[in-house]
Length: 88
Image (tube, rainbow, N blue to C red; front, side):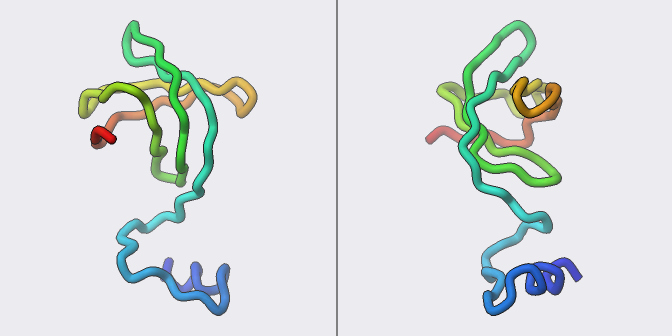
């Protein structure tokens, strides 16, 4: 059903066959602040969906760490859990 809805939103284009996510990701580049316990770091949100965010930062995060992302211009803080992390 989701693939049919996507086709309605983008007529004339096919959904990539390698896409395995069930939610649409919106690519962006938004500076924000991440708080992980007592540590505060500057980050960049590079894509967002209804189920999560992808961020870039200088150091890795622990898997299952609870983090808070702040961007005052876009409303309140967003809290989440790190699902995976990889070095670039």
